[in-house]
Length: 170
Length: 249
Image 1 (tube, rainbow over the protein chains, first blue to last red):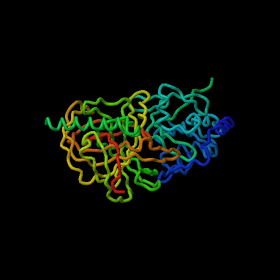
Image 2: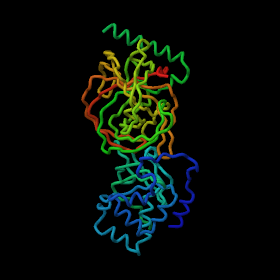
Image 3: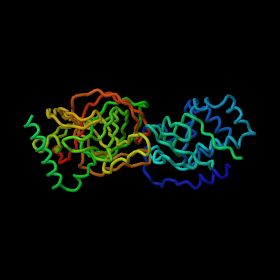
Image 4: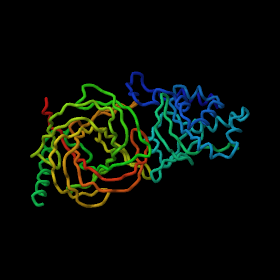
């Protein structure tokens, strides 16, 4: 799973060297996805899960990645004990599957996410997740995007209010 | 009233005539009129970008906060709203460099050719195209709609012209008062994206109108992401204009 993830990461389009970018006053643009997540209290559980899954190095890499990041409130909606169970070493593959289901290859900004209304986006986990724009709200699977376009050095974070769960393989 | 209507019609004819006979760069604006609505965002954006307008010798950092206002294309002066409809979010520039007063000639659809001279000063807002989020894929930003810097207009005489408009509040009349901002196209750099100026002479003059309360909540998407905006009043009207010359040079 991790190898496939790295292979995908290596294949991502890297912005051409020499592109002059403006990061002044951005606050998040000069940090990686992981660094920005660590800096926010709202992603404490997500960061703990990423660490337990051994994905820190990958998500700190060049990318770019689009991460749909569940908040603390999103994790709190899961049945009691779910997170504690998932971060156990024996459940590492399952945790990786859930976390990589929140990651889409490339840097997909909100203006491009909304173009996918009614379509599906393929995640790094392998399964696809539906995108819907309805009544001014953007949904990814069953999650609502509550904040979009947190630009990072290696991608972008969109904050969601529900943890996405991939279909279990039979 | 008759005189005002004639003057309005005359101004419109003059502008159309002028645009038709002017260089191609004058006739691209995808919107003729926009209402400007005071809004409160669910998430206040505080963000830095780099910009360069006609009045900047080089690109400079601008610290933005907002959006404070939202504008949408409307119909006015018997001209229907253009489709796709234009939407823009207005961000206050928090650290604007003081500008000298400049005299410029601008031809707009309300004042017409009889009164082209404006005196402008400091930059107050950066105006960024946005999209209205409803259901489904939102309409694309109309081609030719750039990013604009709103410069204060000093001592602009009141026009006191009644316009027939079709706005978010329905069909009605608006009394156009003083010109308060000149919106000039501005190049912007934000993260890895560059927003060029596509039509350097297309601009807008913003006029005061009778403030009208409104209550609505809607979501927009702009270069800073998705935001929910709560509207409180319709305050101004943006009028399409053509920049003619800088008289201060």
